[in-house]
Length: 154
Length: 154
DNA sequence: TTGCATTTAATGTAATTACATTTAATTTTG
DNA sequence: CAAAATTAAATGTAATTACATTAAATGCAA
Image (tube, rainbow over all chains, first blue to last red; front, top):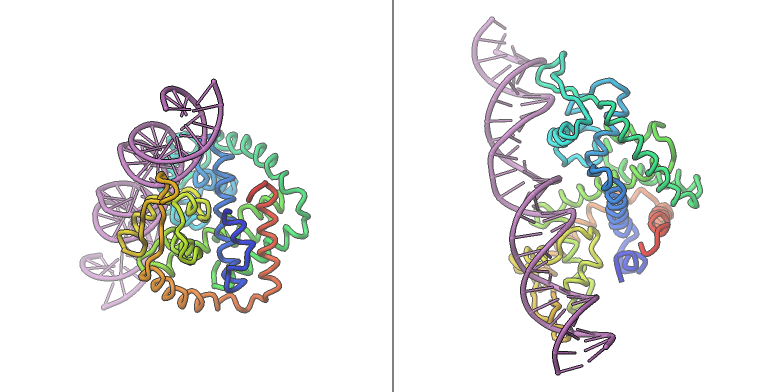
């Protein structure tokens, strides 16, 4: 019996306690799925996340701090993640003209191409979830948001 | 603008894609909350999780493999987590009589006492969520389960 | 019963993360 | 303006994780 069966059982004192564990467990599970999906492309989920943030900027440079603010996992070190992406020649790094402390990072065409490749696989994988109807999907998103918004600024 | 604002915006191609990111993000966020909560007690979330699994066994010993199966994060090394708990004298480790390959782990009274201390703080912290009504809590749990069950055995 | 495959836990190691510190640039303040 | 405080990024390091391998015990099949 694994955690999922544990989750089903009423060994939780409160529904909240169960939800807390369920959110962590499902988050880890999802991360693992993403990890497996990215493995053939030589990217970790954190590196992938940074690449997507850069793409989201639509050619506007973003600083390392900007990346940190948008990362799913604040604890990863954006500076070193960018190093890894540089090694792979997926991004460009240059001094920010407005503020010489800051460093602008821009995604390179090679990075965009790689993301497009991954998009294909990602969309294919997402089909696994198509039997969950859109209304439920929406509800889930709202509930997760509500959970975080219990504390300010999340 | 952080990820939460990003999540609110419609920069996602699909609701599913948004939900995937939301689940990972909220899972990380929740893990961070737990991390902060446990810090004063000198436990990592993974160590805490193992302790709770041991308590859940109600004095029946459980093997390292049994712990692994129940862990929220499969990637952590149960063997080394148990080492850490041993160092802190919160658990006992002994050869399993039925199978000499296996190692039984049992929580010590000191471990139970520590968990009880943490329970107090945990319950206090969970009050933050009390304004989310129980029905929503239930729905969230069901939706997360449904998400995972799209793949078998999760 | 011997040999082979499997299971269980531990361990070696490279990479990553957590956390503190450093360096350099900018902003604020007296 | 000069000094102090703050900010941005990089770096050092200890701990942890990821992944492969090892060692020992068990089960199974010939």
